[in-house]
Every structure is written in C-alpha cells, then in structure tokens.
Image (tube, rainbow, N blue to C red; front, side):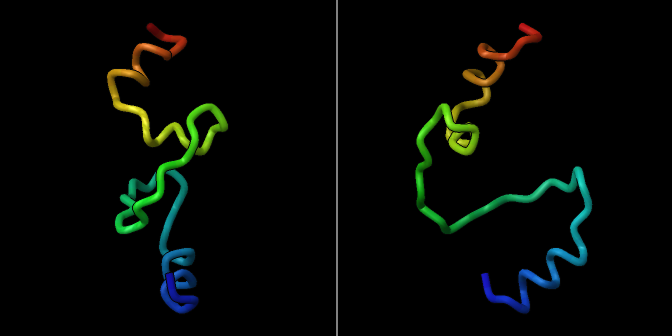
Length: 51
C-alpha cells in the first residue's frame, strides 16, 4: 500500500470496521495468531471456546 493510501485509510478506519485484504497471495502459518485468517469458518467454529 502506498504511504498516501495507508495514511488515508488509517485516518478513516475505526475499531470494528470490516475490511478485506486482497492481492497478497501469502499464506501465513497457522497457530501463531496471524495465520488464523487462513482457516475455514467451520474450522474456526470447531476450535471456538463457545462450541
């Protein structure tokens, strides 16, 4: 993301806003807290403390 674009986004975004990251093509390792986005919704639900 260009600096000007990220500055704009930072000024507009609020806690709880939903956004989608596209074009990265990266797969992060699960289990480190950052790779959880690669898990399916059913897998997340199965691992939830609420299930």
